[in-house]
View 1 (cartoon, one colour):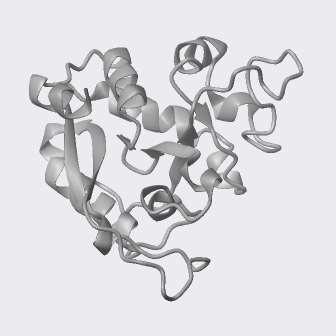
View 2 (cartoon, helix red, strand yellow; view 1 turned 90 degrees about the vertical axis):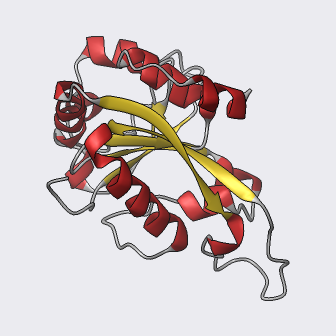
Length: 195
């Protein structure tokens, strides 16, 4: 990978109807920046049924970083779909959780789509994000998603790292659909894990 991870776009489940106003997308996802963060209408048509973009609260996300990351990702010929396991007890505890909250046991599966040559580094960066060891422009809420304190903590289900260009998800369906979009097969082994 070429760059340090600084910008990570949060992804949510697809919007059913914008804000209930007959719109296809949430018009506030990219603040006052470019329409759809710089993505074309055709690109939004492809992505809309897979995931929705969360508002990140910073101009760096609003003026073309998103299409650049997707273009970089699409130019790689060695894209692979994979998964990694993260031990829940290693995931950062949310500051809102009571001090005496029980430590969870078990593992969480995180699904990735990245160039094969980056797999090891992508996994290391995701583990850092889950354990609170990485500083970013805006939070990923990955730890909250893996160890939710409130029901809305699990609303984020995927992420697109914008500096280098790779995806990761906790939602297997979003991951599979994204892999299909990039014409990347998910292995039988991973399909069995998520079935």
